Image (tube, rainbow, N blue to C red):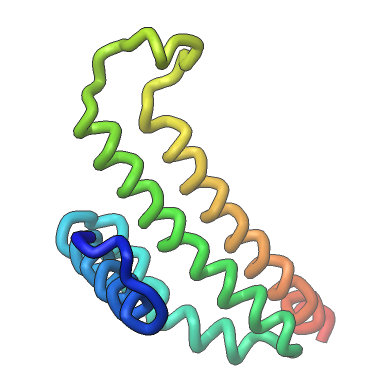
Length: 132
């Protein structure tokens, strides 16, 4: 991020390059991110096929995409926390949990969100199939 004064298209191109470096680093260093992306590959088309309306398709696919997004944010926070250190500090007082626990809670919440969306969209076809 050497040139903070870039403007217009140059700034957009540089930001895109930094984003791609971040994706590459996360892919190489974070097994959880790789697993989530591999699972997404077949689930995104399935979500598009299962959704009966455009908004339902958007909900199914969007809820899936939240998981790796939260994983990227989690990885960034972990890298910074690990870089700073795990010792207690006066500025951190009042934080009675380990630094990584809130991040893991965020990942759990994003997983629960997409699971709920998928279960709710499968509910009607499931009961229709059961009733015949």
